[in-house]
Every structure is written in C-alpha cells, then in structure tokens.
Amino acid sequence: MMTSVDTDLIRVLGDPLRLQIVTLLARETLCTTHLVEETGAKQTNLSNHLKVLREAGVVETEPCGRFTYYRLKPDVIEQLAGQFAALAAAARANADTKRACP
Image (cartoon, rainbow, N blue to C red; front, side, top):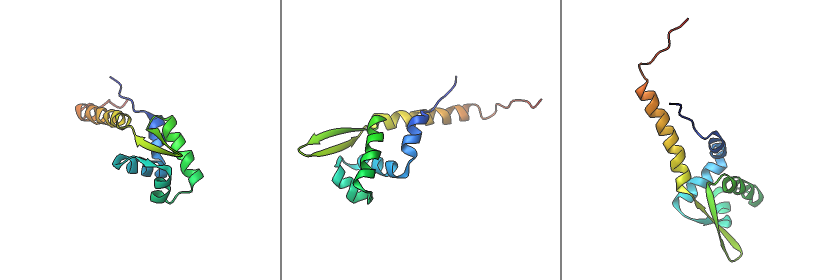
C-alpha cells in the first residue's frame, strides 16, 4: 500500500506567514485587521496569503459588515496530519524491510 501526502497543501502551509496565519486562526476567528496587527504584515501581502489559504480550502470566510472574518477548517489540517501518521505507521511496520543491493 502506497501512502501519499498532499504536497500542494504542504507547499501552501510551508510559507512562514501562512503558517503563522493558520496558527493564529487555530486559536480564534479573526478579521483581516486583527491578522495585520498580529503578524505585522502589510494588508495587501496578507490578503494575497489569505486568498491562497482560502483557495486551498484551509480557511473559510464569514462576512461581517465591512469586515471579513477568517476561520480555520480543522478537517483539512486533520487530513494532512492523518497522511503523515500513515507514513509514520508504514515506516514503523516496515522498519525491518530492506531491499538487497545488486
């Protein structure tokens, strides 16, 4: 059985600012203004990163007047964690499997 990991999602989460955003959103739902304050990033830069996270399905939005709130979708993170857990289980199960050298 081959175990695969979602490389696109890893790439999305691999950016330091996006990972910081995800970490902040794991604690609470925040609007863009809060995220600018918390990260120190410029509004336009932050908006671009939020768009990438939204398109990857990592966050969802909630309009609130003239503000947009962002919420982390935990199922996406759990799915990725499960893929890594499956890799670790496969490595553990095959620890004594060694291919002979030619």
